[in-house]
Image 1 (cartoon, rainbow, N blue to C red):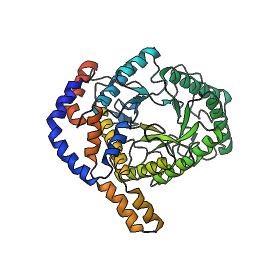
Image 2 (image 1 turned 90 degrees about the vertical axis):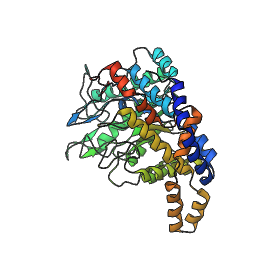
Image 3 (image 1 turned 135 degrees about the vertical axis):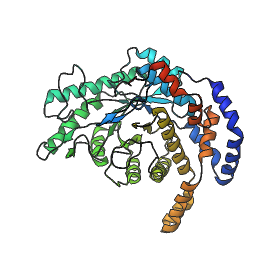
Image 4 (image 1 turned 180 degrees about the horizontal axis):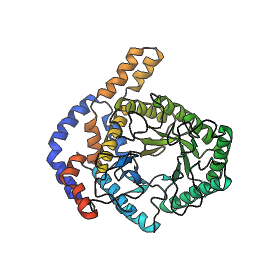
Length: 424
């Protein structure tokens, strides 16, 4: 289904007076508010095709109904999100879950919804139907050369699919590793993985990027072949200028200083992008900003500082993506919440008094440094985020409008209560 513009306009008219009161106060409090609003208008966060259905755990999955049954319906759902918030103008596909039957028709459909195709994602962590070899003991690291070749060929096929859609990046996440000591020769696993990645890298078009994601554990629990940012950095440094590290916020050991990781990767020119989510215990894939909003703000503070230091375009020079699993929420509502949290953290980081912070740092004034950051974090910038949506043509309160229009109920009526999203 598509959301008519007049419904958004009607909603905005109903709540405009209250928004304008809040905005007037925020404009009086934040010095560079107009600059922040424009940057928010420009900022887009890609929605992953696999996050549009109800997620689950190894214990169970409870469908919410009305899930997208095809790639076309996934594009329609992201189009709905983008209509509401005007900040979700791209979709990230997972292959082979989302192989287009007609790439040109899919591009036309996406364009009708105002969407572009962000990074395409390969899948060598599952065995697919009619697959000749199993990835039970790894893919790009596998001791069997034929299995490595199968995984390499799959990634190259994903690149070809992405080229047809207009994507310009490939994300590689590997579940490769080992569950028990002695199972794996670490050195040989690294070498096999590097050689495999080199073949994939050689297939990249000149304008493409390769994002290498890392994860500390799961599904292997003794070792992971690309287990942390240092290992990813080691690979992408060797691969070349088109290879970058991808940071997933849930893929770290407990209490890892993600903002420091981000700063160093930016400094080295090897930060490719993000998978945004939140967590309490591990790779929980919860709504971004739901548990650790201050950490999300601190990450964006380093991002803004680091990108500005390198003269980077905030909106286009890094890959901004969500990677979440919605086990008990309506997936579309959850994604709206994540985008809102990301935009809020970004706006807060843009409001930091950078000159004052730099002076305080040079003077080792620890208390002042903390006060400057926490002052920005505690400033309510939600009116700026809403104003950016309004100027871009979105809804002032996306979730309220989503519920008022009974969008989930309409999707259930259209697709059925038992619909299951492809790939889940």
